[in-house]
View 1 (cartoon, rainbow, N blue to C red):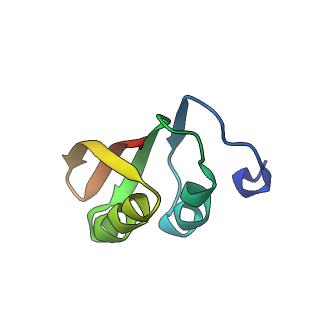
View 2: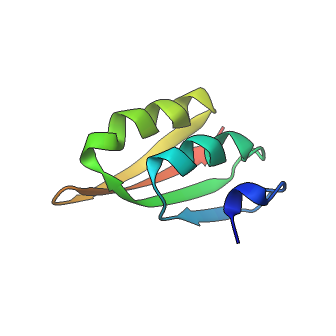
Length: 78
């Protein structure tokens, strides 16, 4: 199933291990305040782009984890 074909993202928690191009389209579809999104498998080189997308869509990064060139972000919708 293609996650971009879903219209309703009113879940308490979303877990995404997908690339930056998909995240750019997915994050703006998350509408409910207080939603938590856990994004893993982010390359360090993509971090600034993902952070900007989250900020533009009223998400606050609450935790960042890093291992080698990979990152995991936990963010909450404000």
